[in-house]
Length: 265
Image 1 (spheres, rainbow, N blue to C red):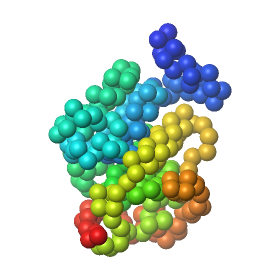
Image 2 (cartoon, rainbow, N blue to C red):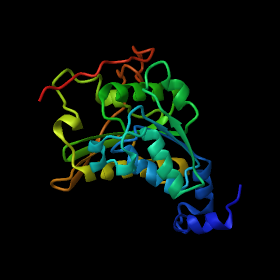
Image 3 (cartoon, one colour):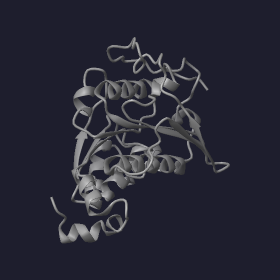
């Protein structure tokens, strides 16, 4: 499609990269990424993907901006309090890069609407903070053969991996949502704001690499970090033959809406 003079200047630091170049930048401009959750992980991911020139970025969230969000959800400002998060995010993304088309989905994902939403995107970023939706995203992406980045944060720690068709999925590692009182949420246990930024930017980098077709994705590898010690480690994970969604004999044949299990701290 060719880059304009303004685009060549805007994306010049990408274009001079040997593994990206003009061709890679054109791939980004033609790419479509869906970010599910405009919160701690979705905020940095959305800003970096918009700045990078990903042509179409979808944002899914049903919530409004709350004062407690602003400690880590950097795409939202104090003036945005009580505004729909998807609209707040869209405003900032379009401000940083008018090349980008931002599609908002102001809704709560469930088994009846997720397939229609993810079907038009190349890559999905899971920036959610609850297990029922994480399993729903995984299962929908496996069924639709979509690549996605899983991300999870709590207190001072984060974990992420990238799933592409044929490789280990979320259920290969975690078979089903944890029971009540097993794992608290960030609103219950807390989260160091910068940890969200650390993980969200990794997810954005994975999305960019996938669209351009460069580097080694976090396939079959779970990246875990502890920001208190500033230690990173990678754990190898395997595609499970007995996985209920992507194994040899899947037992899950339709999407499931799990209930969120509360945790009493």
